[in-house]
Length: 462
Ligand code: FAD
Ligand code: MLT
Ligand code: ZN
Image: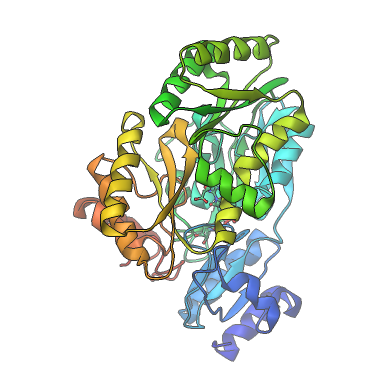
């Protein structure tokens, strides 16, 4: 521990000793990120149970000139939730603030505290006959605060948008310890600046999210899940077009999975795909409250086979089978981590450029980093490919990042579609965003966190 006794005494006065971890093995889960590539060293971990306590913690840390690193489920993939190695930063874990305050099935809203696990919130919405459509493989550990702070994407963005589209209200503790309560439930609210947008996706660098009101949707009664192999990524896009023509906005997920991804899942999670042949696969889900969805999906897939934009496929016959198909997709990230280190690229490009991006990135890697293996998969319907390169001895991850991101930039793409910048991509952001945009971002940071004590070193360097 590397902090003054005075600050520790003040924090203990606010929280009591049981809610502060100052050393020993209990610090470990808060110190390093999910990928275990950013080992940090917290001065201590504080675990408040109320918004008032969060406000006081931020205030006393500010008075002591000590940085605060907010942390939810610590499932982020960009190293945003862990402290640096200085031993001076306080990790503020929100996980004890986990209450669901209200589910309103008529107003179609849920209000939850920041530390509420995403899956718990999804289940509460389902119990009320409603749908909270944010869905990602880490939903059993990720928190509402983390999802909001990261503006998480996931598998349902195609239909329901990013987290930002679902946030109606926020409660935020500002850098001076003031509580900004904007927990409104309104669908329409143009009364002045929509300030909550600044905090969504700010990765804990502008304020601490303590609670959120999220929009819910009607819970579809029927769903259909199919896995098909496709000749190539262009055919996958034609299949997306066909699915959207025939099933309309009922298409909720359209995920691209490469053969390498499925091989990793088979090797490390022991899950075997029901389709043996193919280089590229698509997992499609559609959902509706009206009957006839399955028939429409079967007709659509039949016509895809006729046109040879799908080669082989299965439609799940039950909820259990649908879960098995989803498990193939959901185990990709974990299986990749078990395989070893990877240089992750969470990129997006315009949909029509996806095939060319994949080809050019492959060629550029073959020339600049020969011998690399690519694990490509992702949210094809959003133009978001996780173009992850498995890093072997002798490979330089920074060179690999540069090679891939340069190709992304040549298509007007983004170097982070959904995972954020964290500490992983701070240098890359400066390279690919204009100086005018970066200065605008710095101005916002200076205005909201003048002392630079909220999650310093993440997203941007001042
Ligand atoms: P953390 O990891 O704890 O924090 C994430 C960032 O938010 C950090 O910068 C942290 O400082 C900040 N933060 C956390 N809580 C707060 C708060 N209350 N107030 C202010 N700042 C806060 N992400 C996607 O977008 N789409 C996916 O499909 C996806 N799939 C994933 C699959 C796996 C297997 C894993 C491990 C991760 C995946 N992720 C995905 C990344 C991650 O799950 C999401 O970013 C998630 O939103 C992080 O939530 P968390 O509670 O774990 O946040
Ligand atoms: C996912 O979609 O599973 C994660 O966002 C991707 C990743 O591991 O890169
Ligand atoms: Zn993803």
